[in-house]
Image 1 (cartoon, rainbow, N blue to C red):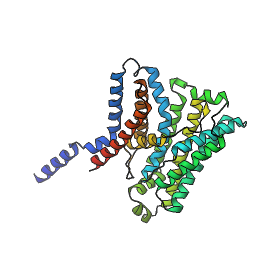
Image 2 (image 1 turned 180 degrees about the vertical axis):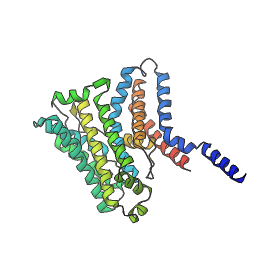
Image 3 (image 1 turned 90 degrees about the vertical axis):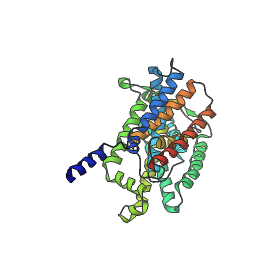
Image 4 (image 1 turned 135 degrees about the vertical axis):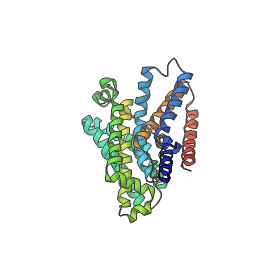
Length: 326
């Protein structure tokens, strides 16, 4: 009789609804659905059209890329405020290399992966060497990288490079725009790293408790360096995509994009306190940011009101995460 009673209690516990677990898995999708429904009702004649949905996906690709890089920085209870400047500098280097005669693929790899990774490595090395919080380091490097971009471009836009480069990112094989395919491909690679590699497990452990990770034999400084290199590469690739979409490299590109990157990660369920988050939730977070920007533009809302909405979303998302955690 007693065994039967205990078995019944176990079954009841298993069937009991866990809101925190449910929200962790599906909360971001609900937020996106609510936002789509709101804008769809406010602008039913245009917002839900197929062309506009495609436009949202393309516009969101850059946000998703920098958001995934920011995700890794936040995952170790840090932050990267330099992603906008890395985007601009990587795009500028890519454009300069193509004007110098380098083929588009090599220019994109050097400008996006190599330059982005190098700038991320600078951030990681400075964090490790100085012991300062990443907020301080990346706040400083954000200004440095932006200044270098202005210097090498003489504060002017750079254009006139290969049409093949622009046309490649403007293509839509099987009806899916290349920037969207590109962002999803990077998302799959990063998901595999976080979910199926020792490196990913160590990064989560480091974010959960740095001291415990250290005493468990995890090389803390090495993993922090890797995290910022990943963030830099993602921002660098975003710079390549942005340059291709605009048909020019802008020295002021990416200003304020650190806000979009942080918002994508936090709205996607990544905890500011480290050790918690999923790549594909960050992808949805980036889509939410793109949807909000697109919807507000359709409704002809002024840009500065959009910043107010974005700031409010970040505060609300962090507060909600804290509330649900309790």
